[in-house]
Amino acid sequence: MIIEFIKKEFKQEWRNRYALNGLVLYLASTIFICYLSFNVRNEELSPITWNALFWIIILFASINAVAKSFIGEKPERQLYYYSIISPQALITARVVYNSLLLVFLALTGVFFYSLILGNPIDDIGLFLINIILAAVGFSSTLTLVSAIASKAGGSQTLMAILSFPIILPMLLMVIKVSKNAIDGLERSVSLDEVLTLLAINVIVGTVSFLLFPYLWRT
Image (tube, rainbow, N blue to C red; front, side):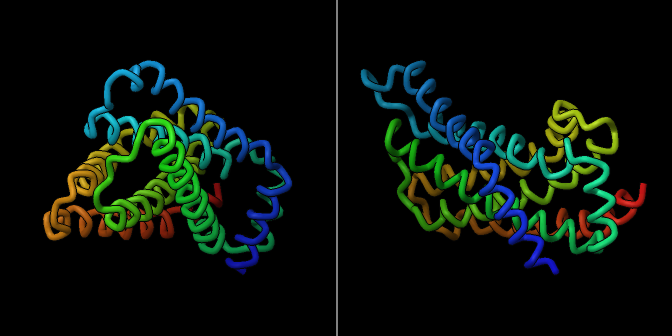
């Protein structure tokens, strides 16, 4: 049932491609604005600035992408889902789907970043692992927060406010691992951070899995 629901999400996203196209346009336009603002043609963007800007852009793109998971969804459709799928299966399917979507957005962001602002990444493998861990963590957190916000009036602003304190520690960890990948440090230097990110993902995913059924019944 989970796989079928994920397929349904992909089909729905493909039918409403304007939302995905809007996210890609947001990434491209934001990166181009950074290019103009920092005058990269005359001076090279420092790796620290490159890294921080990249993850800030990805964070806000993630909030916009995941917000539609529950915010704005019609009560009739929620009632239909309630009758055909368990809440555990629903939250799992949406976390998996949103994780794949955020990985796509992050890779698209890396492509535009490399094209417009250069590519200072030395360890591509570690950077990709970091992207996957960040996508899963952001997806688990933001999907649950989206469900909470939908029960409190469906405000995307409320979702951003609720998610920021939870996302911030994860974001700082992700930025640190990315900086190590950019500097080309030994992977053992980033092992503690990677394991911490993995543990956070497991904890947040478990909390979402356990708490969502109570939220779904309200």
